[in-house]
Length: 286
Image 1: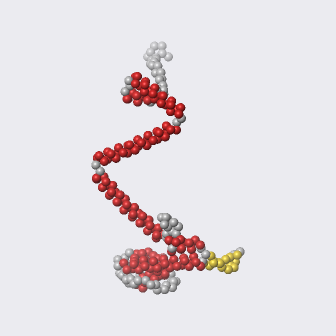
Image 2: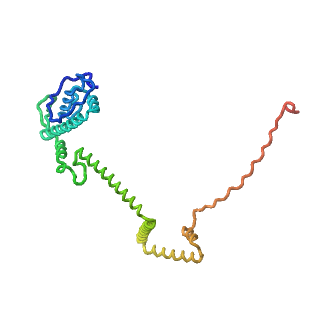
């Protein structure tokens, strides 16, 4: 799990970076082609310069699988801390390279009919705006004060989502505690009064809706309805109907009932004549 079968001998010039001192991971066996202390130091330096684990492994002619395996070993706490510090320096270098490209652009070859005639410098305005928003989100970010995530970099967005989730969980916890305390202090009379208030509020809403619908009717229609109610109540009083009978008559006459004639009774089928069977012993049988 250490050296690759086809190691690359071309090494990149790796200058010594300002990294904290770390204790190399102790190995059970000392191998010249393994993760020696010198190779571990060179790997950390290359990681600080490139910011890429794969590129740093190419520098020391080791595999990425072996690097991550070494990081998981016992006694690799100092190595892991140096790894993280090297990645931070590598990210800073990548930011510097991106800023250099955003400011000065990159040289691109210029071809005319397949022939190289010169070069031109191309500047990426989108990269420049990205770097400005990343370096100064309070100035170049869009709607930072309004709660938008557009003005934040990736780390800022993740941090904001994490804090929002944390605050939401705390608020829900406090809300549950408050509701539980209120339920413990509420008596049966308070619950009954709360239900009565809700019912009264619903009744008021229904009455208001009826009043709005009644106001939409014309004067002639309202007068006809009042005359109908007067005649209906007079007939109900004359018939001396109770409440249930009045409710039944308020539904109106049932005109959808159809009385179908019953089917006539069916006659039993006529019995069939029995068949006559003949045998060779019968007289007159042919």
